[in-house]
Length: 296
Image (tube, rainbow, N blue to C red; front, side, top):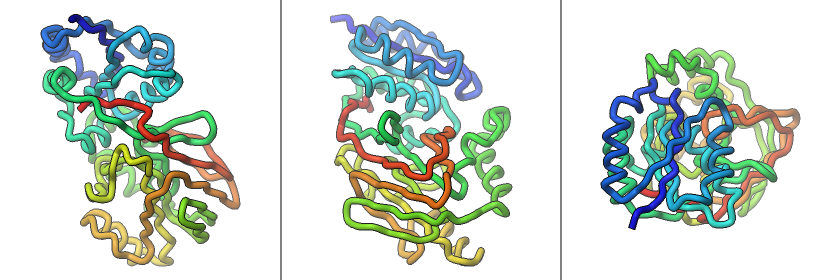
């Protein structure tokens, strides 16, 4: 029986390379029993609006774009009572969600085959404040501005290297944030260089958490906090440990939690799924348990 597929396309993602094999990818979907309708985004928020307004009319929703596009689609689906399964054709720069799910990257044909032949799996979604969502991470502090501060033309030309270079530029600007963090098992106070709530093994295509630390549908997020060690040498030790997936540093804290409430002395800038998320003095993040079925 023919199924209706809503395909949301971000034409700016992945250097616009989606169109090279789009026809072949649509053929794969057609042979897999899908009748596909295309929706092209023209700006930020369009993918959310499309998913919110039209997804209920389709058997499956999919998107072509980066993690930001996927995040927008998920935000739209979260406003539906019974959202359809969601497929992902990753064409972005970092592709953190694709790395976590082991999806083909920047290969529309292979990703389309995964939509046809893959299974729908329950996927937790992050809540950011009372009305916003994130697909895989919300964070503050060191390097969190790298993803959205890096100029788009650099992302297209340099890819992952653009993130690294932009991060190096930020090194002299690293500051700590005095915070009180309330989570399921307690309260932590201190000066932190970095903090995040995530549901992903990959962050910015650079940092990878071990697979045994992350479960995508367990109702828990990973709370990561990095204390201010007081000197650059110790900070480099922390970074080296994270890159080696060794987390035994006393200044690196990782917890599993359903909720986390952050209170700062002054408003602090956050990112959500690699995009600017606003500034907050107080913010509560939570885990919505399995509201989305992700195809992989």
